[in-house]
Length: 259
Length: 271
Image (cartoon, rainbow over all chains, first blue to last red; front, side):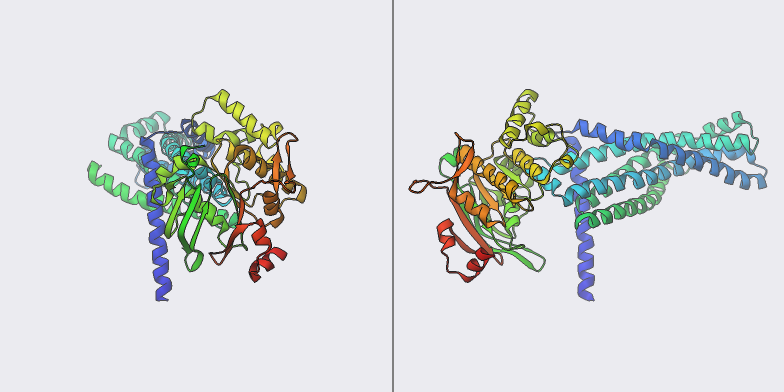
């Protein structure tokens, strides 16, 4: 038992070390030549443009249900006019970045793990190294750059669509004045809110790409191994996003002051 | 050909190389030398470390102990970054071809040239030349999934030889192929050896392929390989290395292996 526990712990420490090294190299590659601009643009298309439908749908329905739930609570205090503010604060600071990241993690961390995993088990990664190309630079760095960059903009879009979803509920079910809804939603936002809401997707983008690529690059054991890597990538990326979210939120609250 | 190979430097040298994965010993103090322009056939049962030798030669795997030299440079003392230019001297044909699924045949073969920022016109010319060498110039726009196993193997050979490497590493290039296609592949290896004078490490399970390599030469007039006629003073420079339990059991030429008295080798040859 003691032996297996030691082995287990060693295995985990080794995995964390490998993950950290991969992440560091992928990030450091951004600052040296060669850069694969074509691959970055291609990944931006796959990750950014490809994720548009799910991000828009998720944002809209989240904003809508948020309006519905908050209105229900606010009505008890006769403060229904605050609906816009609450939807706006919740979407921009928390739900926009987190839900967008979770959706992109489900879609793209799995995609990266399965694509790189298939390349790994069919020796294509080794072939790339044999042909004198660094797979981290060619495969991981473009995915990392594209995810961090595109998630930032996807989150902005998600926030906007979420507010639209909220306004639809405010107008159709709550019979609130749209002008009042948008004004309160707009005016309640301050720079620290926006800053917090936009720093998160960059960090979550880093997590999604590095976790997805790490599981892909370390996949073993044929197609079954690729399947396992894909599942693990989504689970690990999602849990990490939620856990890191808590710490960033707290950290930013301390750094940016109470708001 | 680099300066070093002209000077008679060995193409590949293994010095007391050992490697183990967890409890499994893969190589145990293996030493051998591959002369420039020579071919060494690596034989042994599955799991005897043949593929590992190729990966060690490329620096894809690192040994636990021992030293490895490629073209006179000590690979085991180099960092991953320093290995990249060294790999330019090497070409590898992987067992399952390992072609990039998402790229066409043309882009697969041109991969290294694109990375080296070679001008497009030159890339086009060299890709066509390499594909003509393996007689697949009509497959330029196809994807690997659209090719047969034998064709994929030939594209992999074209990709490995595109930059005229001094050393070629073949990992079971005829595994899983029908006898006719296997002969085509062996013919390509003989052509590569005799036309470009490259050194090679060849892993194979098919003994007849190894013996064909040793007993045939490439006839450029007829554009095909032919058996070396009796009385010819011709050296195919093809030697055999038999591995057992990560150790070298035998090293010698075709005659020596055919006349070996070692029980294990005799059994292996009659399999």
